[in-house]
Image 1 (cartoon, rainbow, N blue to C red):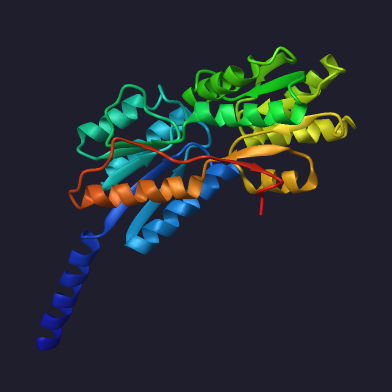
Image 2: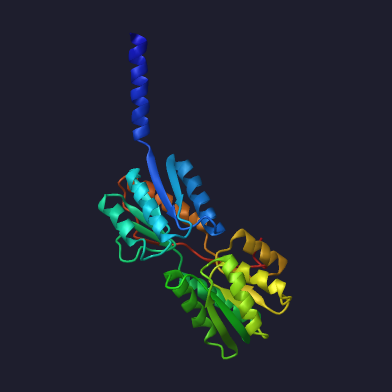
Length: 296
């Protein structure tokens, strides 16, 4: 009889420990992009350090899939929801549903437009564009023909990275932007778009891409066209492939926005929320221009 009582107590205590577990849901736009893989890994490392379970669901760049995944995380009763939206407008109904259910929401890299979330973590995307623009102007000595590869149309990050870059290069009469086309932040699409750009522009001195995935796609097309010696490439994110491209001389510069740190900070904020603490509404993660000079 005593053994049965002891066993029941152990089971009960185990259930209490299980129910007391802290659980974070992470709805990420895509894990096909190394940037978001790094973000996920940074969040998992911080969650493990804090003794928090983190459930990650990959929307594969589908707003419809992300909507259903966020509903799934709500059903699982996660304590805090961290969302990297596929689309800042499309994600709004799902985020509002979580908020209405009393689940605090933290957004990272892209906001949920118009929703009052617990915290938003981001970089200054305009500053990222400015840093890339300044590096490009320096590399071209203030003169040359430039092509731009844009991110997802309408995305706040794409708008700001474009505005910051143009704010810099428009100050130089010798810099001419010959074309600006979207490649949706995707490497394969950027390679195809860049092939067309190269065919239409026999004279081209530089490419500025809103992220490294597109910059790397551009590099691939430029190498295939045998024009690597004449075209300088710039990106944003500082993913591993981009850093390797800088080492090889295939890219000139990228802007590091520290995705692992960003997600670790989001997980720390989530832990604070679970402990009843207040968190800052907006957190801006510092940026750094990466070139061959400071790569090490």
